[in-house]
Image 1 (cartoon, helix red, strand yellow):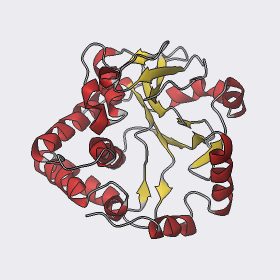
Image 2: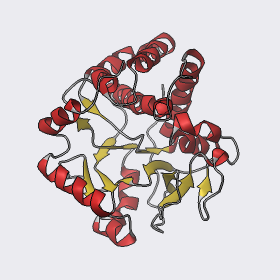
Image 3: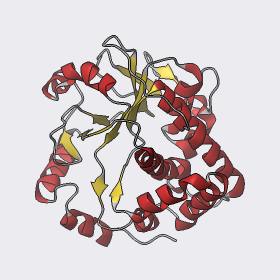
Image 4: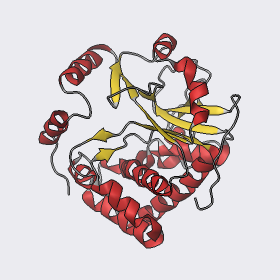
Amino acid sequence: MAGMKRFRVNKMSDIKLFVCCHQPERIPEHPLLLPVQVGAAISDTHFPGFLYDDAGDNISEKNRSYCELTAQYWAWKNIQADYYGFFHYRRYLYPDIYAKRPYRIESAATLSMLERLNYSCFERLIPQYDLILPKPENMYCSVRRHYAAAPFHHQRDLALTEKILCMYEPSYIQAAETYLGGSLSYFGNIYIMQRDLFQAYCTWLFSILQDYDKQSDTSCYNAAEQRVDGYLAERLLGIYVEKLRERGNLSVLELPRVHFLPGRTGQMQKFVTSLLPPGTKRRAMIKRWFKPNRK
């Protein structure tokens, strides 16, 4: 990242927001949104009308451990754009710069819903920033502690990743300590980055995860625990962002997420978030009470 120049493009920027899907979800036919099937190499079918992460240079077969990162790797190696964004099939960013909470619950991703979320201005907003992140969620404990306590996460995996980072990227030691010792977390591997920054981030991220894969033993992990590379990448993104802020030469915007949950599940979650708003101390405390500590 050393010597990276600020990057700006005109209003006709080529913006690609990839929506990562492991099942054939209906994605609104919006000009910015591109549905991509993750883990296509290990799937029995290719979803009609989707892009696939097993084309060209790819790590699609690693999807069980890398999760949505297989789409990010595929886009890094095979797709040209001015801005690269990554959402989940039920989690999008939306352009509300005044939102107070990190996310809201809605029933379904439709064109009419995106319009209500002001997506018409997204194409103009994105080129004004080098990096757009989800609003961080305050968990009222350190990122390290939260990782150790989260279901299907193991403290030793994050510790090993820290060790690798500090050994090969010592300039990141302070950024790692600041982010992992803080209480604000970026979840989901969701972001929008300009081209040069995205290329640099992927080079950094996948080299660290490659070293982690070589040094770790996850042979006894169950299906949920095997998603470890995806879990680690969420924390590495926060460290990377903290390093960018140390240098102070890039513009960053934080936007809220919208979670699309249909039916009674969505209604219940909407009710819960009204009682326990995301980012509040009481919500974080209650969530911790119901999550066993994992070592």
